[in-house]
Length: 339
Length: 241
Image 1 (cartoon, rainbow over the protein chains, first blue to last red):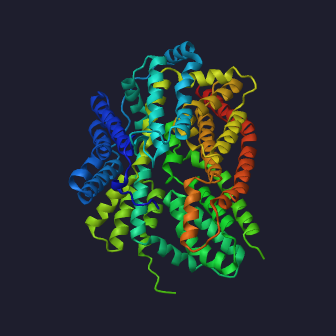
Image 2: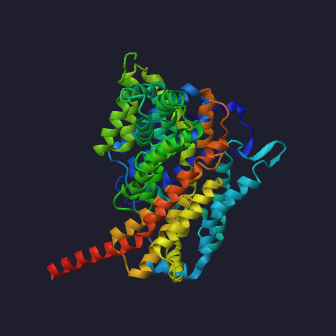
């Protein structure tokens, strides 16, 4: 669904998307070094290799396109991706050992710093939003501060940088210490950090393999074009199910809407398009709440919150998701038909 | 109907079974991609190139890694402890009230397009979950791990549900623009993004009502779970002694 990105059209910017990727690359490589230095890491070398291959794509991907062109770069990135999946699939990525402060230390420090501790955390969203709204088109001699096509992301990067400095002031912990501390969090997320990109990749393969067309053909076998209610049920449920497989409602939307909603509901029964697509997309979101494929929403938080059951966030969401799916079906049936 | 070609669907079958059998998801997704490509006679090198291209072009998905150092640093200096004790000082704070308040603010701000105002890494882990836990600890004393997990999972769910069902009201959001572009591409004119945004409102309100109703019952559920787990551990202790 994403438009093809052409590197030639970029407007120069200080916090450009390429610089953000470089920064992420440096962060990941720093963690790789820290992993290798970890004396008690049970799977030190394979974990380091896993993150090295990942960071490499951020650090050298754009440079490689410039030097060797797109085909060669995409090939080595593709092979790296396979290696990453293989390392993770063989269970060779694990947590390491970390310095964990005692509860007393934490309590003491919390007592000492009080609500000042909230400042950097609250700063990140507020600075991001303010920068997005106020500074988005600032430029000096046609060099923009923020990448014009990724303003929010650039603003977020700036906000994180500022928050690190303010955090340094408040806690006396340097940005380098902050980076080292973040290894604990990154390791607890582990492979789930990479799954969203892998799914984007699978989506790309599905597009060129015309999986969408095959799904449309399959679904059409079950459709009886006269039963309006069943058509609505199949469209909404189909959106939710296909979203669960793809982990993303955006990937399911064009397939299901072109396959069922357009021919049968809009053309066949004169359904009103605006509520149809709005409620259809929301039916897809009900699916997002129920699938491990939406890793960044469902699996990463479980890791971040140190939950024993990695599917617990999904389990908590399922009752709301199913109720809303039923409401969506009834709502859509109630509002899209004008006669 | 033309001849039905189901081969491109093999990837979906692999994804479903791979997850069901608990293989590592990265491996499952890669294998699904490889097999799908092979099933539709894609050349191996072209397939690898597609892998690389899509992986490269979706790198912005990893940007949450930049937030983690700030959060990790603050946690090293007691952020979660502070969030808990701060909430404990507010006598009227309960887990359900904190989560409900957050849900409302998050959904409304998402409807205004302020998506980056919060998130799993930047607010749920460092602030919301500790506060929700703090309120429950305040009321019930030290919580058993399963109850802690349940409350934390509810905090994460609040953020997801609120943002998902708020964001489509905001007409400049990607989903709305995608729907708009899809309709125009398919020859349906006269629909403005504003219409789509307006029709997102009923479901957004339904999400608010449904989830706040569930949260209202959360306090009772927490008490119930705590009673269940303390009973279990008393029996266990009695058995040991």
